[in-house]
Image (cartoon, rainbow, N blue to C red; front, side):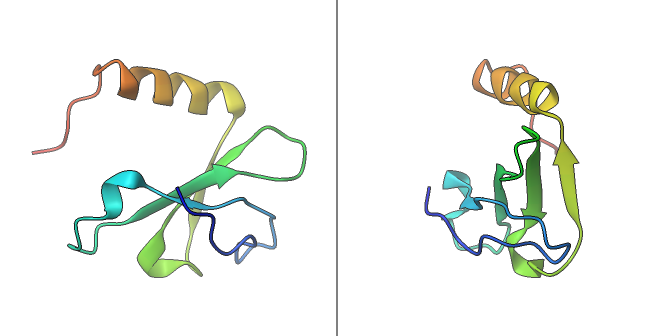
Length: 78
C-alpha cells in the first residue's frame, strides 16, 4: 500500500493507504490508515472524495474487521 495525504479535512493526522483492491480502475477506491494521535483509531475514506466524510474505528473494532475479512467471514455486497 502506498501512503498518501497524511491529513484529513478534520485536521487529524492519518497515515493513509490506498486499498490493494482499488487498482481495477473502476473508481471504487477506499483509503484507510491509523490515526497518528496515539489513540489507536483507524480512519476510512472514499479516495474520490478526500475532503469528504470519514469513518473512525476504535483499534479493537478495526482489528476484528480485518480478522473477519481475512478469514473470509464477510460476504461481498451483491
